[in-house]
Amino acid sequence: MKRLLYFLLFGLLIASCGSDDDELSSADRNVVSEEGFIPFEELLILVNIKTSASDYLVVKSIDSMSIYVNNSYWAKINSQTLDTSKVDKTLVGNKFQTDNKINYLVIASQDIEQPDYNTAGEFAQYLNEAYDLKPGEYACLIESFQVTFNDNSTKKYYPFEYKSFTVEQNSRSAFVGEIEINID
Amino acid sequence: MKTIKLIMIVGVLALMQSCYKSGDIQLKNNISQVKILDVKWGDTHIATELLPGETSGKWKIEHHDEKLPSSHKISFTMTANNKSVYLETEEEFLLDQDDDLLIVLTDTTKVKSPNE
Image (cartoon, rainbow over all chains, first blue to last red; front, top):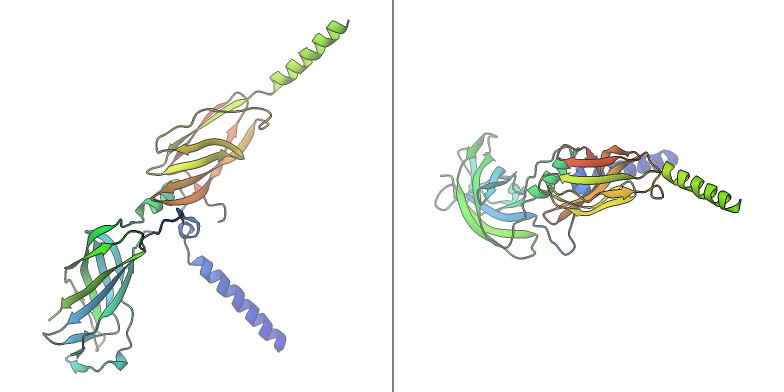
């Protein structure tokens, strides 16, 4: 019995080591940045959704948010999930809402197409596509997003909200700030 | 008599020398938008840095460097946008005696990272 337990533990250890490695593409595993160079990685955005002048939408997450930087596609991503059971909310139609502002955190890393990495051109494309934001001012656009309501119905919105943000020298992320979106 | 022996030895040596001919190798970087650094054919260094479209000088492979014919992969470091990756071609390139080999690396050249 003890021996079986050891085998199981050993098997789990091997399986966990393997799966971590498999998640990385060939380029992610083998590409290095120059010493002292801090690659820009992500945008941090706080989004709140107003359903009326004083009410905010309560959902687990904002899904499939399409983000553009200076009109270049950046990412399509879900916000971090919230435990809405702890939010003081009321049901209006098929929506939960609250009069306390709720911000949804969006951590947006750039989507880079991951080819098979079999040719020199594919590696070259990967190295060049990594969109390094140099220090300066940029415009972030929330083009669209989707929410799932209390009755499991979903709706896609196109707010086309812009917000400017600043990228500092040698920073790995930039805080875009709070974006208020009206869906009323 | 001694002179004839000496001439014969020198002749044999010259003949042996002429049996081993060198080969020339050069490489062109036709990969889009990247520099390639530290280019090697096997263990033989053939270029330090090549910009897109640039061709290296001819590198003479002498018999004491490598016994020809010989076939090796090209290895190099590809760099762009402050990022680098070490790659080698899947194909081996054959250099024979008296050859003047021009290797052209393009976007479609099959490569892999040696730790794959």
